[in-house]
Image 1 (cartoon, rainbow, N blue to C red):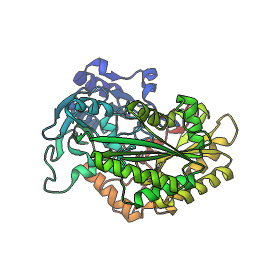
Image 2 (cartoon, helix red, strand yellow):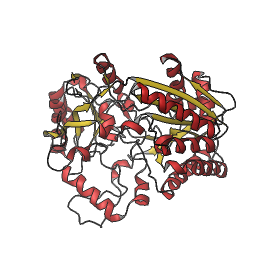
Image 3 (cartoon, rainbow, N blue to C red):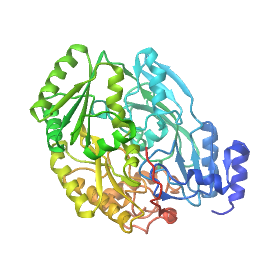
Image 4 (cartoon, helix red, strand yellow):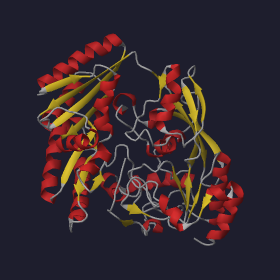
Length: 492
């Protein structure tokens, strides 16, 4: 970057010296997100405290022709917040005010640094909660959820972040503050720019205020844990439940290796001998939940469940969920290194795909733990390896890629909720044609003609804005410094 000190001086004047970081040792704190095997040290870090300061940072970058990357809590698992080596990392973690909770309109207005679970805690006393619940909801931020269109265990019934955001205040890549969507109103006229922004992974600008829907607390919640001898039976039970017209709030599956990890980490006490467990949660009107619960229990038994536990109270329900919510981090108890993958398949293909993942693990000489959202077929295979063993990291990477190819083969997707980021850009041409990718990049160029907002993400060969569609240039240089580093990988 030309004149780093000059840009740093301008940012210090706008934000205050304590909110601009240039010391290399301090910068290393921000060198990666939750996907720790890609690391890039940014040229500098800015810590704005409001929309005006964020706009000042972006304007300074635009004036200097310097790329910028927005980052929330840094819990992402796709390298979406991987810094640019010659750019500014805009960290929104200090923008953490809940500006309004309005039960009458069933809305809350929050800044992007607000932690996901804090929205529910603020709304619960008034009888509401915020439905999207990633496993990292105790530490992930709303701004990051907007960028990645995050889901969670309850997205089966309630949908992803995009289904719960009704308005945004954003800083555009030229440093202007504008609003997208209807805010407290629904379905504003015109193009759905709000829908384009949610899930755009920081490539269209920076969200500085988010208006979200609040969901009324259900009258009843019932949760069961069903143990099966293997994933075939658990997958069949999942399809049977959905096929019967029952839409639970959540259906989560863990296989034997994931259960082993959870037991080592949090001693969740799942049934011994289980090759797979399902956690099924129903919520809604009490009479409806009671009727559906009986049907779910019957379907699990008919499909081979050898033990079913019903949560007697909130404490037992929390224990069921404790193992599932801790699974990603828990895998560190049984493997020194691992890759978190994220793909989607039709739920009816679960038994066959899980068998083929097991075959891939065997053929590549690695282990794979499966823990995922079974209800909507969103897989999270965890590929385990030891980087201290020569060649094992490469075999794990090959197995991980083969799993993504498997998801595509079955008509699925390369990502369900973690995003494309830097990690999966190379897989985009396997899902989309050149014309598809060109069209997507035209949208990006409409927002960011200078190509400064989170460059090098999503697209394998970013097209320079103004270039004719179909004539791709080489890969953007922003990721040249990204070198895989498998040591000490830790995800949430």
